[in-house]
Image (cartoon, rainbow over all chains, first blue to last red):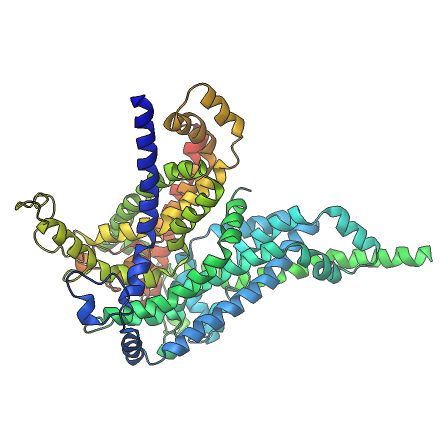
Length: 278
Length: 318
C-alpha cells in the first residue's frame, strides 16, 4: 500500500517539476514584458515588479532617443526576412525538384555538396564572406544579406526529402505523357503537393533571418542600415544602460516570433520532428 | 499522329536533360560565389600577410607563419579553454535534462506534451541578442532580479532566525566578474537549447516500436529501467547526432557570450570564445590573414572532434 502511495508521490513530484521547468523557461520573457512597462525607479525597487506598469511610452521614447533609426531597423529586419524567405521558397523547391525528380550526371556529388554545406560552420565563412561583400561594394545594403542566403542548403535538403516522399513517380510520368511541360510539372503538380513543406521552410527561414546577428554584424555598419538585433546591441554602448528601454526593444524583437510560434507550433514542431529522422 | 507525339515526347525528354541543371543553377552559382570561392580565398590569405583595404599586390607570402602565430598566442588557448569549458558546462546538462524530459513527455497525452514542448522550445526560436540582453539585466549586480532573490532568501526570517543565511551569499554577486560570467553564459545557452534537444530525442522516441515498451513493462520494468534498457539503446543514433550538433553549435558560440560581455569578452576575457577571438582579430585589429588562419584551425579542431564521435560510434563504446 505504502509502495503505491510512494509511487504516486514520485509521479506527482516529477510532473510538477516538469511544469516548474516549463515556467522557468518562459519566465524571462515575462520579466522582459514587465520591465518594458516600468521606468528605472520601479524596476530597481525592492522587491522588483512582477506585474505590468505604465511606463511603456516613456521606455519607447527613450529607446527612440538612443536609436533614432529604430523603426527603420525594424522595417529592415522585416524586409530582409521576407525577401530571404521568398527567394528560398522558390530556389530551394526548384533545387529540391531537381534532386527528387530527375536523374542526371553529377547528382550524387552535388547532393553531398548540399549536405556538407549544411554542416559547415558559419564562422568559417564569416571573414571570406565579408571580403566578397566588400568586393561587390554591398556593405550596408540589404542584398548583402538576402543574396548569399537566397538558396540555403538546409532548404534544398528539406525540399528534396519532402518531394521524394510526397510526389509519386506515377503522377509525374502520367503528367509527362499528357504533354505537361517540365515547368508546368513543377508549377502545377509539385508545388501544390509540397505546400506543408513550403510552410515549414518559410517559417524556419523567416525565424533564422529575423534573428540573424553574425552576418549583419559583419556587413552592416551604418546605424540606418542595421537590422533589429544590431540595433539592440547598439543599446549596450557607453553610459548608463536603460533597462526599461532595452526590455521594450527586446520585446519588440521577440514578440512577433512568439506570436507566429503560437499560431504555427503544431506545424513547426511536428515537421521538425520528422525532418531529422531521415 | 503517333509519330508526331513521339517526336514531341523525345524533344521534351532531351530538354529534360538540362532541366535539373537549370533548377540547380541558383544553388550552384551562389555556392561558388559565396561558399567555395571565399573559402579558397581565405585559405590563400591565411598563408599571407594582408590587411583589409590594402591592395592585393602588397600581399606577402608567409607560409605557415600565421598559423604559428595563432598557435603561440596565449589568448587563443584562453579562448579555446573557454569554448571547451562552455561546451561542457552548457552541453552536458542539456543532454542530461533533455533525455529524461523527452522520455517523460513521451508518456504524456499528446495535448499536454505539445503544450509543454512549446514552453521548452520557445527560447530556441527567439532572438539570442534580445534574450541575452534581458538576461544581462536579470543578472546585473546591483538590482538584478537574481541577486535580489538571493538576498531575499538570505534575509528570510522564520521565528526570529535566518535559517537560510548560511546557504545564500550575504553580498551581491558580481555576475560580470571573471569567475561568474562563464556560468551565466553556460546557463543562457543551456536554457536556449534544452528544448531543441528534447525535441530531437522525442522525435526519435516516436520511432521506437511500442511492443518493446510493452514487453519491458510485462517483464516488470519501471520507468527508469525502461529508459535504461529500451530507450537508451534504441536512441543511440539520435544521441550521437544530437551530441554532434551540440558540439558543432557550442564551438561556434558567439552571440550569447558576445552580448553578455558587451562585446568585450568580459573582465580578463573570461567569456571570450573562439568565434569571438576570430571576430576580434578580423574586425577590431583588421588582421584578416591571422583571423583566416584561426578559422581554419577551428575548422580542423571541429572536424577532428566530429570524426572522433563517429569513431566511437563505430567501435561500440557507448
